[in-house]
Amino acid sequence: MLDDGTYDAIVFDVDERDGAAVISFTIASGPKRGEVIELRSQNWRGDPVELLGIPATITVVSGEPRVRFEP
Image 1 (spheres, helix red, strand yellow):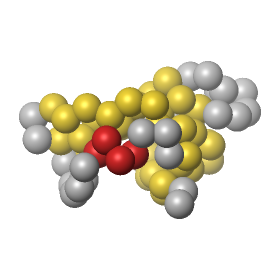
Image 2 (cartoon, one colour; image 1 turned 45 degrees about the vertical axis):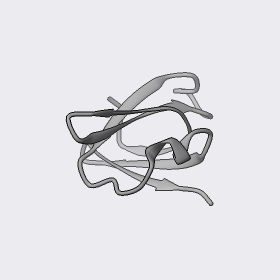
Image 3 (cartoon, helix red, strand yellow; image 1 turned 120 degrees about the vertical axis):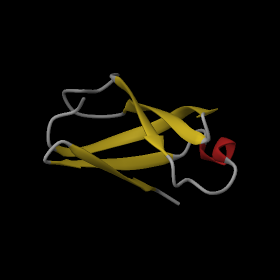
């Protein structure tokens, strides 16, 4: 998992497992550049495939990640 902080990322894979969207990101900058993480969302609505290639910002506070997808 990522340390607390803010990370630029890109979505490179999306899967649906057990009714949840599992989104794979690669970190795009900084010392963690190139690392891959997966985040799972039970609340995702819509077609997760539309996220492929989308840039995102992942903010981790107290070990809890939050994702903001860039337009």
